[in-house]
Length: 254
Image (tube, rainbow, N blue to C red):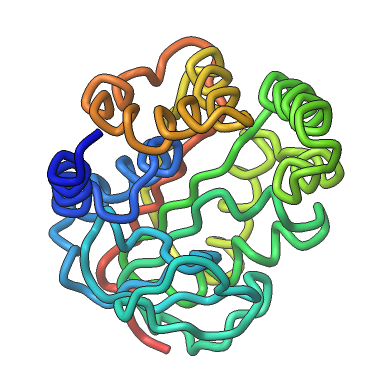
């Protein structure tokens, strides 16, 4: 490929898909949609467990992020705050919006209820929690963990934590949300819906778990062009659920 062509492709992806990759985009699209639905895209937003980027490539604005590790690609749009999901260092109702995307499964089972409570405690308008759930998702992660090991002779940290911690169940997350709301004396509209068909995810993940530079580049860049189609594939047996918690707007006292 000629150098001008390479520069054109790089410019294209940096303009329209800066720091995005397909599997992450499919997690964050419903979160961005929920935020925009309530016209909260310009409000004070906290992400719990963003890593080094989180929602920023998809929302394209400055946010606060709480995590134990911020290693990875850097951006000035992330205000990094060291902390843990189950003990957030903020006052009650400090944020308009709080989100947590693929974080709960990396916590021990006994920490998950406290994390949900804390996220709801510090938020006054909207909470969105995205998390892989259920036995079928758990089974797929076990198979992908073994597939990764066979390919590279080592474990992938994230898949290994999914397997060792176990994935939560939908009912379990809903109970934790309800109990936390009651404890905080907050009222909310709660809805949940599936995210990412398991068969489609398996294709995406196996394209990512590869020694082939072509396959990896297909995953990292090529699939981005199909995101308008891929984001519709939330039917059948799915890997995640999205929990949208719309808090009553008058609950703003400390």
